[in-house]
Length: 292
Image (cartoon, rainbow, N blue to C red; front, side):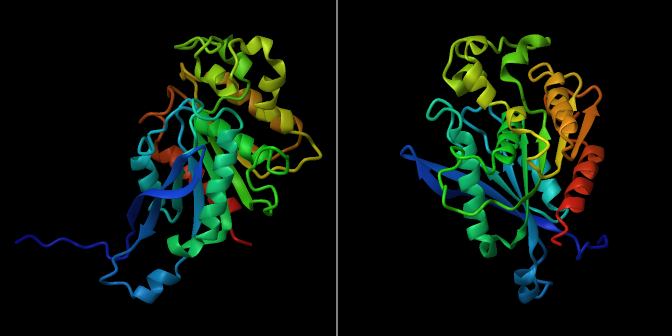
């Protein structure tokens, strides 16, 4: 018999799949919720029920199309062990509903989660928004349009208390995606960007392209929650320059922003989801989700 030490004070995670939060366009929309948990056979059940964690609403990237909600489940589960409830949000794909439907769905999902905070051990006073790739674009757009009409299906509801936002390699200027080398032509009929906006030529659709650019809503007199941006400098799908454009816009307006260049990393993947980067994200969230 071998004897080893048990980590009785450590955290596990409890994953709940296919939680329906809304129906839109005759389509059920779902969440995957990852909760930190401890061993209920050792910890007092009342103690487990009383513990409350910050909420990270996560928008899974997909080119604004059908999402694989489990794409980042492993790294997000590891992150949840740090003491966050992570809810991965399904939005309507662009084939069903074009921009800004994805932003409206993210807002609806967060409102539903806050309304059901007690069911998932969520502290409703501590809310962060995070997204990767197209989900990063949706996260940014949701934050910068929080007080703008036309970006919510619940116009009479109070503003969401989003304390901070994390953007992983999200696009910003959709009409400038082809300025840098890429594995696809973005300004072409059938591209993810064209399908999102419902146009064939992004360069000839300046009004809607501007409406879908988060920089359009950045100004010195419109305070925003702190934003953390991370992007790989070998990303061949969403060029690194896209995050530079967003960073420069926020800095010029005096808005709180951090930009991390991940050297050698591509469009996500194991070279991106490193312990070092997760520590930086954790530090950022901890600083802005204090609950005070």
